[in-house]
Image 1 (cartoon, one colour):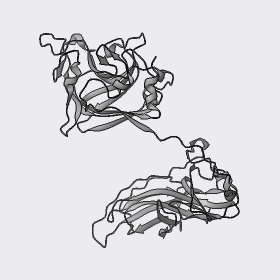
Image 2 (tube, one colour; image 1 turned 60 degrees about the vertical axis):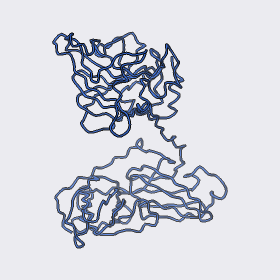
Image 3 (cartoon, helix red, strand yellow; image 1 turned 120 degrees about the vertical axis):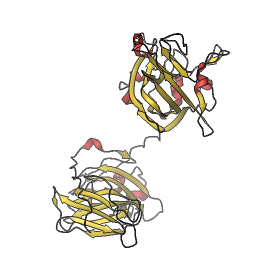
Image 4 (tube, one colour; image 1 turned 180 degrees about the vertical axis):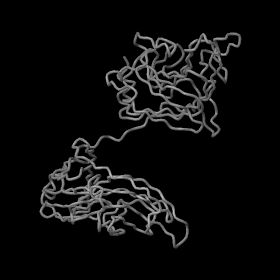
Length: 445
């Protein structure tokens, strides 16, 4: 098969780094010689349609950037345990092509010199007519895994200590017999390995996964307790049409006829929709306080799909006297003027689109410092910038990136979007992602 494009991506040598191992029912690994996904997972190409055209997976296999002639390549479905798949051999220049591959997700493995050098990388075949060009891929030292089965799993029952069975790897053509509780397997490709331990005496299997470096020799994989799955807490979707977030009635106090967790639009200068005042902002739709309510309810609009969203435009004062004018769309986390511990949050997410530039900010209004750009006695403890697009977009920000200091994250009162020039904003579905998120409202100070 001739490469249709001279698009080759140099393999990246992955250096040994014991700190990069990530464990999920996992532990550290060690091993012999293997191939890593050293290079790009770039997918390109596209042959003509037709039964004779088909598709092809193409790559150039290298050793230290020199052609790996006669390297053996196998393509296995990424969840498969039987090791069956497509095979090919690289030519004298290291080029290899596997044609007519069915749609699916695969792992490509290349090996050379028996078990000394190997590599693996994911391959996504989207259709049966487009080529997938994987560019240049460098072989690396392979990995060894072996030892006593009780060093790999946290089950010390007698039946497992001396068990017989098999070890297999998803998406790879590797397996080894377990005899009297011991096994060893050479020639695994470095990278992410999904090992499955299959006892002969029972249908129950044990799954262990690990990130390995080239040349690792793994003799223990005692799994750590997996981290709990992250939960997502919807703070507000505005479907109730009121001016406090959806958790407020349950987790904040009833004060002066309203709950905490309130939404608001604040401006500096404070004038809004006063056509006679050159320092006035213009906010559309216009709103006013009614019956102890909030003008914020006016900007909760129908989203055109049977739901609701926040939608408004804001025009800034057209006067040189207020070049530093600002506006903020904000929500109190809980009761006004009370700070809360946000450390349970890993990520803050929301949908936003429209036109203009904004800063997403987190504030601690209990501090005495004043950030003049926010137009009030509110101290910004962290912020990140964004440009609104005309298409709906879901933004996700790691809290640790916005507020790097963990101690600072333990005291926050407010979050919102700050504008310094004309803008149109659509906003919806504010979410917190993390663990034990409801504890935030138990941490008020």
